[in-house]
Image (cartoon, rainbow, N blue to C red; front, top):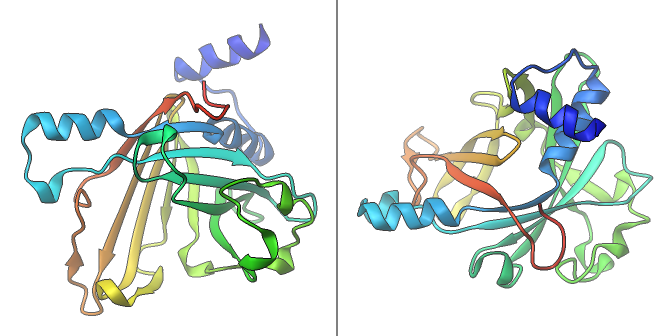
Length: 222
């Protein structure tokens, strides 16, 4: 009953004052589960928009990584690029969230294993990550995303002009990221820029990717 009451309050847009830890816990609860952009992809095809503006169908299954020696909250995002959640896992991304020590924001950083071969195939299981330590991870501080609560949802974005991340094959040296997380949907927008500041537009990249909460065939979701 308490969980239902809290959900009702959140959906009504009336959120009680929360500490940084409580906001982090709420963000973690909302993120966990499965997300699929199939409706957006179908709407794009049905509306006849130009190919450059059509969003690909993507699905993400978000799971908590139980690694007690890692600071913050670590998540694994299993990304499916074909077939939705029933399709193969294309890759597994690791994302760490932690309350900022100096602001009310929640700091989000995508992190990478320094030695991926030492941890097995994460597409099959995350169990091998249990002994993971902070020293086993690397990240890019300049590309951190800073989340805050806005009305009835969370919003996160990189600091403008700071995320320098080279993608040589696409002639990209700077990336701007924006996220929004609601109870029932997840919005993601990533913009790429060339060294001279010219935008590099990818298919569907001019507008955000919109995921709806889904049921993960492998377990999880709602």
